Amino acid sequence: MNAMDASPPIAACGDTLQPAAVATGAGRLRAAARSTRGAAGQRGAGRALALKVLPALAAAVLAVPGSPASAQSYPARSVRLIVPFAPGAASDITGRLVAQKLSEGFGQQFIVDNRPGAGGNIGHEIAARAPADGYTLVLANESLAINASLMRKLAFDTARDFAAVSLVTLNARVFVAAAGAPFDSIKDFLAAARARPGTLRYGSSGVGTGPHLAGALLASLAKLDMIHVPYKGAAPALTDVMTGQIEVFASTILTAQPQLQTGKLKALAVTSAKRSSALPGVPAVAETVPGFEASSWLMLLAPARTPRAIVTRLQQETARFLEQAEVRRRIAADGGEPAGSSPEQASEHLRAEITRWAKVIREAGVQPE
Image (tube, rainbow, N blue to C red; front, side, top):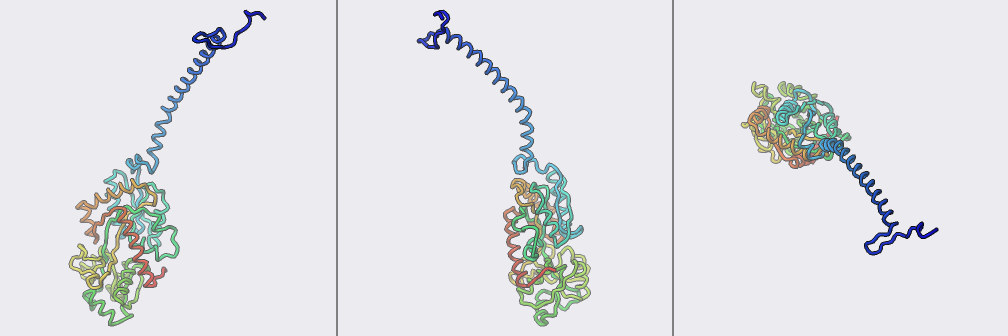
């Protein structure tokens, strides 16, 4: 092989490239060009893919229940409001008012779903097991707190399976007696009960219900020996009060109001801590028996882990409509008082009620039927 056929090794001599280096360098430049064109093509394909994927990704983010965007768009469809009592009950009447006002405020339908039975537990369980997305709510009353201690087994945990939104109303009960009863006040009734221990009877709408525990609490605080007579609902209990079969019954004001107005019943005292605006002339039991309070209440709750932003929006809308004069008049006409609250205040109220009724149930030896 002569010198002309030999390819000197690649070498750099200052700024001068040898022939082999030039040839090899040209090949590298051509390869680099091809690589650049390939990368550019990949980037173009990537941009095209991004244009297709990003809108779908944005839609997915909007649909995530806990995202701020999801809370802002809530509710995007109708919402179910479980009322765990029968149509026409006091809770149902207020529940339909709540559903109407939330529908007006949010521009979506809030639909009442009556799920009565088991002292409210059927409706409570459905709500506790629902998806935590704000599309199932429950309007519970004091039975939610009472049943936490009364029932041996519940399919849900009252303290952990709900996110409190707001208190809605506080509803005083009223101890009523027949128009011809020999006592005209709660003080007279207590005197009669002490004079005849173990003979006077108080009715209820069932074991463990609000009227039952109101009577049990009165007996405990006033040191009375009375007989509890449970009924299947308030109507038969009130009938037996009017006919003298039992002496007293702690009725909701709404239920007793017609008979009070016609003079078939008389009001002895209300069960709230202070006098009720619905019956301003009737004293509170607490004026005679310090520390007594056995108010009924209604609270709006969602399943636990419902996004806080959705809970906040529901609470704000509830607080807004509870300030409306029309709503306040309707609640007052049903014997209640508006009781808006923060989620934290509602949670604390529920915890306090669970503790308070657990003590009454334990001391009175109340057992479920």
